[in-house]
Length: 254
Image (cartoon, rainbow, N blue to C red; front, side, top):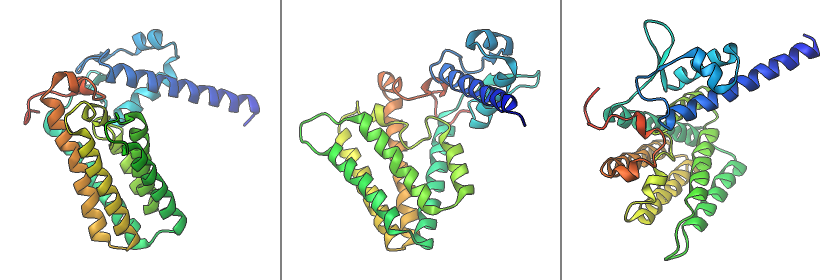
């Protein structure tokens, strides 16, 4: 393959990523409403990309679960019942629990444990300071990093891909409800409980207690269930949840 061909390939990849990110933002912001058909021609003009990378981006958003193929051809924006959101969180917790168990059973390196510990130490610093507002932006980043480290410690690429897929739904990821949680009463206490679960899970991994590590990470995901319940009870808080416009508000429908 020539240098010119390689460069054209890089450009196509860049255009695909541009289209994918822009489309995702339109969906999550509510600019594209649930059930709305995504017109290929309109998106080409709106996003300023050609049809080939746009089509690839549409397929990728379908794989993420934000779009669905429709019988007449093309794609439409998905919506989700509250039950489906709970189930998505449960799946993520199950997969992360499996990652923790595998990490414990295979054993992890000292450097891997130190990396996780340093991350948790940084979270402790964010949570310290009585009477001071929590830096949620830092907490969100560090929380996501810790969850990524647990997946890395498992050393299972197939599982890592499935977890990445489960996290593609914005309301199922480990940090989905943290911004909303920051607006709730007792938010610091909930974050402290979550941090204690982080510490307990890592200790179980270090002691090679696979079943305990798995149980803790699965229970840890249940905090997101509670945060979802709080957010659903307050429309102003719910607006802070990424992708909240995609959620149908009556539990048990769908």
